[in-house]
Image 1: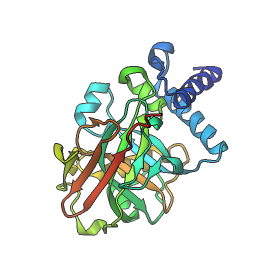
Image 2: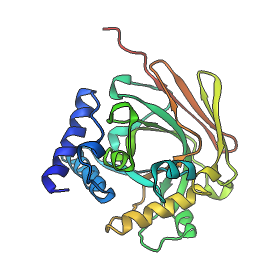
Image 3: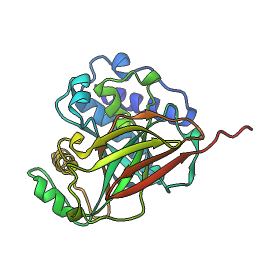
Image 4: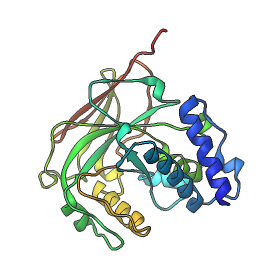
Length: 265
């Protein structure tokens, strides 16, 4: 894609955030767009957000399950950026008007205590870089109409990021085996999905190592204090205003997100 097209696509996505109106798939509007182009579009939006005063606080990893990779026709995950404005306190109502077509996923969040610089990062390197982990929920959203997304569309749309909600009790990663960690996703008191950490590339630490190497190839490092959402342990579920969703990780903790009721005015 030409630089002018990259900026045009980024502007369309940014306008969808502001207006709440989704756009047609970019893969249709720009049929020649590549994965590399999609990351350029993503970065244009990040540049716009940071220039407006937001700050990059970490990354999220998507497409971690083999089934989703087959569906998208890719052989590796993707990533997006997490900015300060995307984080919300648990149990506190999150304004629904900030989303277009939200879904939610349970994840393990890593908070880094040491820098992680690829390429060449191993799983052991990744695990040693983590200061603590937290149970997390990620609200994913799409600025693309009806979630009709290809790999190009989701990457360009910041990996379909929406919001991050972190638990409040830090856990030493040495105290748990994330491969066998169980999770139940509970909506309004009813269990809707279950899964284990093996759904995330075998273990969430594999996802963290992948991310460090992927952005390391671009000269970017993961830094102490940054948060990494390692990928969904279950299928995403659709949520609506008024819903209360809890991710319950036995032995790790629970985290609850509440999507605020719509303002009748």
